Structures are given as C-alpha cells and as structure tokens.
Length: 182
Image (cartoon, rainbow, N blue to C red; front, top):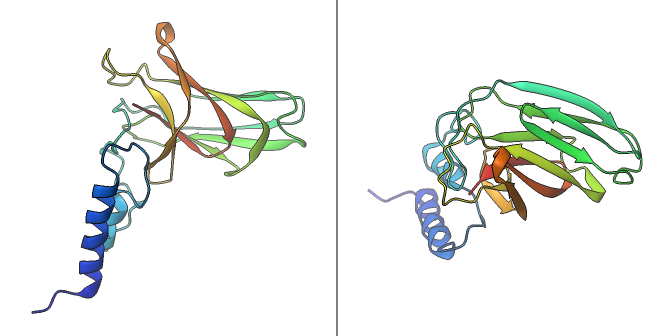
C-alpha cells in the first residue's frame, strides 16, 4: 500500500518546522494543533485549548467569562475586562471607536481578545494582565504574547513585571489577542 502524498507532505513539513525552530521561541508556521488537524482532519479552532495549555503559555485557573465594550476616541480612555486593563493614551486614535474585550469561558490560560482586530494605534496603548490565578514559578518571568485564535504564540511583547501585584504589562501597537506567557 502506498502512503498518501498529502500525509507525506504533512510529515515532512512537521519535521522541517520542528528542526527550524530549535531554541527559537517565535512561531514560524502552523502550530501543533493545526498540524494535528491537518493529519486527523479535525478543526484546530474547536475546543482544543479548553484544557490543554499551548506551548509557551502559562497554566491558569479558569476565569469568569466576560465581554466588555467601551467607546474610546482621540482623548484616550481605558477598558477593563476581568483582571486586564487596556489604556489608550490621548492621540492614539484619530476617531472614536467601540473597543470590545472578551474572556472566553473555561480557559486554562489567561487570554484576552480585543476587537476590532487589527486596529492600529497612532501611539501604543498599554495592556496590564494579571497572572495571580496562574501556576508561575519564582524563577519564571511572565510576559505578554500575541496569540492567534488557536492560542499559538505569534510573538512576544517587551513586558514589565509588577511582582507585588502579580501583573505584567506591555505596550500594544494594535488590537488582537494577548496572553500571559513565559
């Protein structure tokens, strides 16, 4: 029996991705869930991350699901959702925009989703994320990561820890999904 060409291509891509990313914490291709989905035919965005912690993210106790909306304009403002705060400075927006922030139900990672996705600020906004409900070792330095909808880390933001309050903050250039990572 001959192996299917599609399966061989997926396996070759898996090997190439795993060897090209050795020691590099950034993602250069589809994450493990997408690769698994391509082999099994599953949906990489459907419930795979509810109890599984994607590589690089911090395991946390689930938070209460929440959706918040705030209209923010050229004068700046902030939006809070659960233990996260996005502060938009004056001049970062040229017009008023309704910003939405969401915490999904039952997640085992701290992720906040902002919309409208891709909205770019003229001046970076500041995001503060709590990790008080997370399993973080004293030797770990949590930071903020940009993640896709399947919670694969795309890149890390320069982040600052505020140890006494178990918060990490960073400057965000646009609206997307952000997660507590290590």
